[in-house]
Length: 294
Image (tube, rainbow, N blue to C red; front, side, top):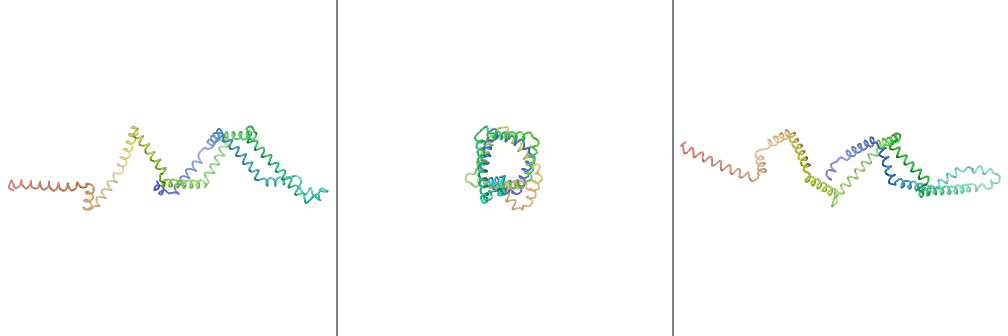
């Protein structure tokens, strides 16, 4: 497995995977699928968790942005300090007007934030609160639009097209491929690789199935036979050319060496038998000619 991974071209794999992913994103009809996912999430109560998360996020935002809210309220107070300065008798209090306005804005901001946070807390604890029922109605409307609205389908497809054109897809695929390679190589380098165990289980399961299923064995044998014979027939001219070229290139010593390697020790018996039998035949022929005086 590490050898196979080392021989792969990362750029080619990432490029093809990213291109396939973009094409799938562009062509997929995701709106109904998203509607089904959201509907499933609602049926499992996940919309309640989402609602609570939104409420708590809003509560935190109010707390963290109190100064900004106070400044906004201060600027929105309808009585400007300049007007107050023109009121008779108030001019003497001019140095304290800004301080009064700041305190007023702070008090109003505190009161507004407390009331808003109180509404959020009530909505979280009350199953029948108007905010909660409004949120649920909105979720039902979104589900319905995703599954049946052509306008929503167009909006989702526009998002898909934007994603398909984004270079971020290539980066995500590249990161996934690098993480996948690192995970596989780390597993292969361990003392008890997970991949080895899975491969052994797969081979054992295949062998068990093959032993138990006669029809599968016959089908596999037929497939191997067809493919092997087909490959041999297609390669026959090339095999003949290769054999002729190889054998012609051998000299006598190489030919003898090849035969000895293939035949082994039996070659010595062949030589000895040939010598003895040839000698006997020669003696018989000589005896015959001597017997008839020739």
